Length: 507
Figure 1 (tube, rainbow, N blue to C red):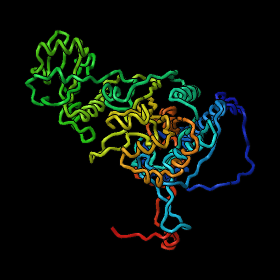
Figure 2 (tube, helix red, strand yellow):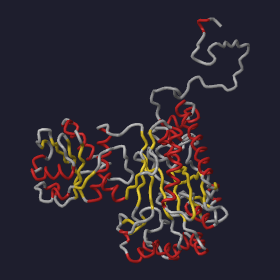
Figure 3 (cartoon, rainbow, N blue to C red):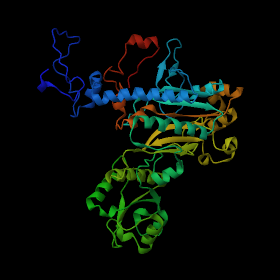
Figure 4 (cartoon, rainbow, N blue to C red):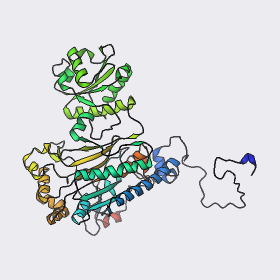
């Protein structure tokens, strides 16, 4: 090879190949639907339609290889901890797990349907009754939910695990062993070590306005309703008032505050307005609602709320739960716009002590979280306490503002199970009919058990530092839950419908 043609930067840079014959093994059209390795934006639906080409993109290709390595790591770690991998059925029964079921008609049983499992919840509890004390699987789950950037429509995977004779603390120990280990293996970012911070649900809603707080954001929400109790500011009268104190926020110009007000009033946030003011270095209170801030109120905000000089204060006033929600969204947006989010770090926390029940929009009592969880206090609290005051042994693992796992100590006592469902509007016959296998199994000596299910897709998305969960799934569906590559869902023939005794009706 001529010296001028050498390329010592690559392994084959000193090798020259002389071709005597060329055979094309797979022909390609002259024009590609889009350039594969390019920084240029390509319409996502076009990429998904030609996913087999899109997967040749180096970054996307590496994401799928990363997924494979993470799955192997999770399996190896669970095996090391003594868990047994067991597959559970895909064709299962309908169960109230918080989302719509995907129903599958049965040809052999006319008029009856299977449901694709939203989670292997009942099966893994039955495995505990069967004596498999430490179970896990990489479980496919199916929920008919609207897609989001961090939630794939239709199907997703979770590291589902359950343990007999286990407490909530035992489950935390497994998560704190498996999750940081996996993250550290595939990232050079700083990873929180266990034990993770534990935040009660109600505290999370008070301080962060959300039950999946991003702890990289240093801002917190405080309740300052008492400060404005005797205020002349009518917009705050008879309202819950929340405040977010932003250090050095007084340095921002009027345009920044106007843009934050516009954000709060968007349909997604739903605020009627967003009040604000500045505490200047000079000691003056300026801008926004400054004329309503008396000297006494200023002193209280300084002493009790940390409103130091050169800060900005943002106030949200509404009914209690709505004020929490709006304040939570404002906190997130402030963190982004002011670039307060700590970079290159994974911060974990457990949200604990979830309410067992909540009120529906119709004012009826329903389960807040997992209906198969053990109430804190057992049967006694179910019989004596206001349902809305009952806490459950339920928890979520949160990472950088994403819910990454849910888990609970399970209800293994049939008497407690019947009473818990009774409060939510189910009688014992309903429980027998809808959860017959569990109800029956619990009559035969069930060990206490607990478990959790970290979401694998979301875990990989975080490790890959991707903003879109579709970027770490080989063949994802689009924002309308359509598979553009395989053209699903699709219309089926009349004969296929007849086989399963289904007749379509016009709307």
